Length: 492
Picture 1 (tube, one colour):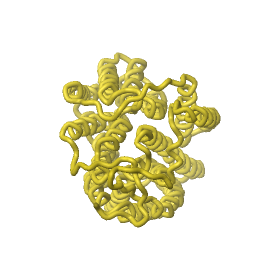
Picture 2 (picture 1 turned 45 degrees about the horizontal axis):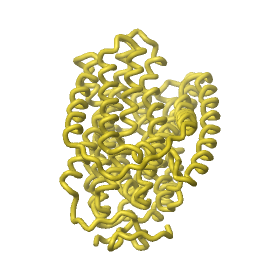
Picture 3 (picture 1 turned 30 degrees about the horizontal axis):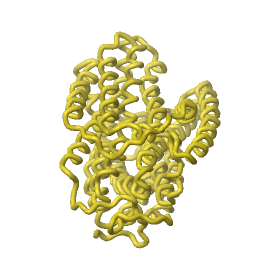
Picture 4 (picture 1 turned 90 degrees about the horizontal axis):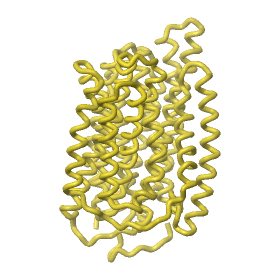
C-alpha cells in the first residue's frame, strides 16, 4: 500500500483491483472530454461580449447578462445534481447534459438577436452545471482509492487548462471571424462527444428511487442564485448595482437558511435534495473550506489581474492575457503529476507548500505598482498556479474520499456549489475594493494608473489575508486510506 499521512482516516470504497476496468476508463475519458468542452465554452464568452454588443447593437450592461445568466444557471443547477446523480443512471445524466449543451450551442449559433442568444446560454449552462459533479462522482465510484489522485489530477488539468485556452482561442477566432464562429467550433465537438457517449457510455454505480421535494428546488434557486447574483453586482460604478446586490444577498441568505432547514428535516428519511450529512466528516468539511478560500483567491485574482495589467500597467488585452497564460497552462499540465504524488505521499506533502505558495503570491501582488515589471508578474503568477495545482488535486481526492459511498454525489454537489459561490465572492470583494479606491482617486484628479495601483494593492492584500486561513488549515486534511477487505468504520 502507498505511504500515506500519519493519522489517515478510513474510506468507504476499497478495491482489490490493481487498476481500472477498460470500460470504466472509457467512461471517464468521455466525461473528461465533455467537461473540457463545456468549460472551454464558458470561458470564451468574456472576450466575445464587446463583439456581441457591437454586432447586436446592445449596451454593455445588457451584453454582460450572457455571462451572468450562465453563472446564475450553474448556481441553480449544481446544488440539485446530488439528487439527479442518485436518481438517474450515468448514461441518462450524461446524455441529458450533452443534449442540453449541444442544443444550447446550436441556439446560440443561429440566434438572430439577444433574447434567443440569452436562452441558448441558459440551456448551455444547464448541461455544463451537471458535468463536473457527474465526472467527480463517477471517478469516486469506479476508481480504486490508491489511484484516485491520478484521476483527480486529470480533473485538475481540465478545470485549469480549459479556462486558460478559452480566452486565447476566442481572441484568435474573433480576430478573423464573427462571434458566431465560437459556437460553430464548439458545436461539432459537443455533438461528437454526445455520439461517443450514446455509443460507449455505460451505467456506473447504482440508482435509487427517490422522491423529489418540489419546495427545495425554488429555495435552492433563490438561495444560491441570489447569493451569486448579489455578489456579482458589486464592483461597478455607481450605487444602483450595490443596492440591487444587497437586496439579492438578503433574499439569497433567507432562502438559503430555509433550504438548509428543509434539507435537515428531509435527510432524516433520506429524501434530501442536497444531503448535508456530508459535513459530519471533519476531513470533508476542512477540505471544502480550504477549497472555497482557494477558489475565492483564484477567481478574484484572475478577474482583477487583467484589469490591473491594462488600467495600471498600461498593457494591451492581448499582452495581459499572455502574461497569465503560462501559469494557467502550467497549472493544468501539473495536475496529473500532482495526482501521482498524492497517491504516493498523501495530502500534506502537496497541500501545505501549495497553500503557502498561493498565499505568498497574493502577498507579493499586494506590493505591485504601476512600474512593476511584467516578467516579474509572469513568475509570480506561475508560482501561484503551481501552488493551486498542488492544492486542488489532494483537496478533491481527500474530501470526497472521506465520505460514505452513498454521499459521493451530494459531496460533489456541495464542493462544486461552494466553489461557484466562493468564486463569485472573490470577484466581488476584489473588484469592489479596487473600483472604489480607483474611482476615489480619479475624483481627486489622479490618472487612472496612479489611482488604480493602491486599489489593486489593497484588494490583493485582502485576498492574501484570507488565504492565511487555508495555510493554517492545510495540515489538518488527511488522506483517506482504503482498508483491507473494503471495510469501513466511523470516527471521522
